Length: 322
Image (cartoon, rainbow, N blue to C red):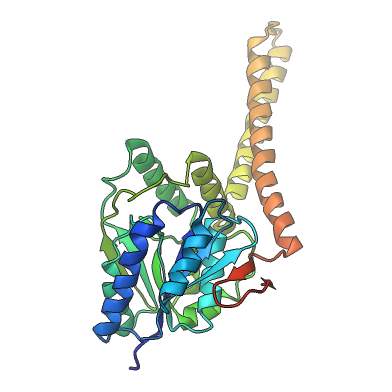
């Protein structure tokens, strides 16, 4: 087998504090793999600047000028972590045989790259980086993550437990991924749908080397909602079941009211009426909200807007739409 051309795709958003520390690690890893004859000398690090407001792009340009194993692309505006990863993968697949996506904060163990490349050479088209534990997480984040994976499994979504966005994809997987046109991207659930041979590499996740996390609770919840609504229609079915249950309960209450009327056992009271009104109102509002989430996703998909727009490159300056 010819040595594969590897592209490390690294999304960045306001990472000027951490990049000077992690870039040498990524560069040394590429150089070591080349020296060990594991990957082609044409392998690259591709940084994807997701509309940063600090000096992130200036650093990427500097890294690119310092050595020929680094390049970068910059999006026209901030479009989110998933779109940044997608943009990098779609650009990298033009030259790469394999792509590994990894965050730039130093939390993912870069030594697993060796195992991922070895797994690819043994026949795996997809290699998932899976956390061996969650010791570095807070209790809330650990508990909420476990609840999310269990919820996704209950809803029938095919996801890899404790896998984020640290993974290897072969060129043919990337080519198939390019055929998925949805704007509502949730790569952690989308890639398992493609199929092909896959394997898993476990690693320990560390603390950030520098800076602050760009994934607060609000973004985590948004990602969770996107994942659920893009991979499963079970919430709509649950709404239907709740509606059927409420209808059945209402029929029983109607029978109870008529029975009381016929037996002259009617007692004027607000409690039962109040409970029924609140119960029905709550189910209706919940149902409208769930249906609205799906309608909103349909609205965005129908527009078919580009998932990313590249405004700048370290090698050629031009605007492209995809």
